[in-house]
Image (cartoon, rainbow, N blue to C red; front, side, top):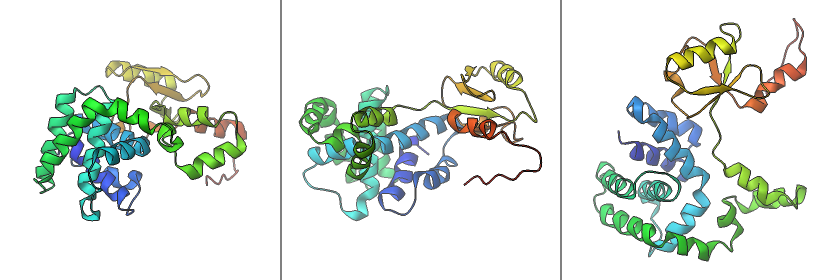
Length: 250
């Protein structure tokens, strides 16, 4: 399956309020070639991350909103806009591949619409987004309710927090020391041509230079590693646990 189509299908379930991206995306990843899974994940999560901006831009470019039955076309348009604005995918490839997915949705009527809107976005997105920047939701890509909460607790830093939230997170692994030491696993990654370096604070953490499908990493199926943010990795060591204790991970 085309990674753009897979990302759009996963996002459609989110737009329809039927699933979270964490539950809808794995179902689509299984239908994508292994080499395209990283791209599919980036398209899905990136589109979701920038949804407030992408949606506002789409509404500006469209003559009328999509019908509820065409949420899949809307999702496909958002994926196309994300590629144009936030990735290094060449514009001609982003537009052509995205438009071509309309046939797979059995909605060939949408090809002309997608092509026109994406080409207009390629030409006018900078000016259109500048017009929308006055809205904090568009400017920060955070919903109004979350902005209100951030402002209440961090009135001077809330926009910086929003910017940090929008930053692309690195892919971080936690090495299961029952199987391998961190240095041993770094050597395995080097032998597999995967660029990585140790985390600064976690003694078990490894930062990958580029995100990838964790299922393709050495020993994942055997439990040698898992994906976990570095801050979360620190919790176990900070608890100073002793044998026989029970920990509730809620």
